[in-house]
Length: 428
Image (cartoon, rainbow, N blue to C red; front, side):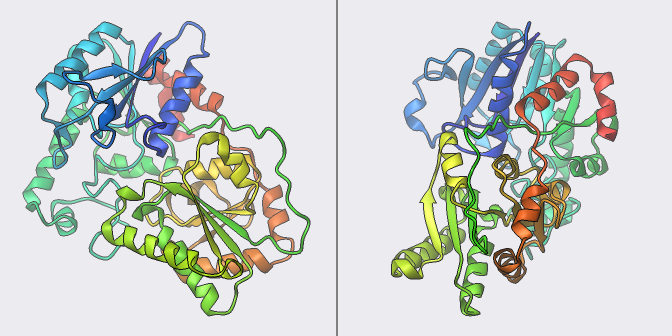
């Protein structure tokens, strides 16, 4: 079986959940007998040195089976590509590889119309689409968060979408839905990493019998157990991820300020992450101003430490310095790979109480949940985590190891091999 994985970005060039999952799947499928897998990961103008004159697709760093799609001239309003030679290069690539399965992990940087393009180029291939957010439904980055009041959105409509993005008339969003659904007709199976996503997609118009849950999986094996100091309190917190608005870093920093104002200062928050360039100007300024002010304090008075970006092989060392992992996301947070990473190292998670985290975490059993976007609720939860005797030991002991790469690979292989047989997974 020949499988082509189409990914938003390459995780070594731009970090993110969707591309990390696609690459984990790529690595896992390479170990499956009688299977040939190819990865086509996009890049954009943020990495101009990798663009070659006249090229549309190139190899990546001499690695077998890994290719880069040189994305440019994308129409964000319609999520499509306006570059005809690039589309021709994509079709040529498909016909050269002749995959049995084309698995899209995103259409961003490619175009939703590439689904139809794939169907026309390979009429007998199986097309799988994994939704890593709600971008097909929501034009506001797929987050389903109302820009009017920052509340979570539960449905899209021409009027509601226009209220969030008033630069285009309501009719645009009506036509956008038709445009999206037309191209999604080329898909044989839609997969979601969390079960809660199935209902919103079905309500929006995707065929329920084509929606399947397949969990994300990571190959994370600590080289040794991470020691936890035997002391009365566990007061070290860690944030891991992208420094963008949706990840809620500003909620965490506000919680820190609340605790200090109330006189509670016996804690440390370590921030690990990057991609702040993708944050809004307001969000970036607030984060940078806070971190600059923190760095100006005497060492003994600092509660927040910024460690910067990290590579996969640095994760264990950074996890070893914390007791709790905080996920303060202010959107639906589809799956949250950080939860898997923290659990792999025996660290309980404190997270917002919606979406993927709410589905995965059992409050008071293997982690703690707090009201989404509520900095005071997070501050109270952090204080509890620091001061409630025995809480850390109880929650750490309650952690069940997260799904690994092999489990994810088996789930997708079932989808690839038999569309009909895989449909029952949606009900599990």
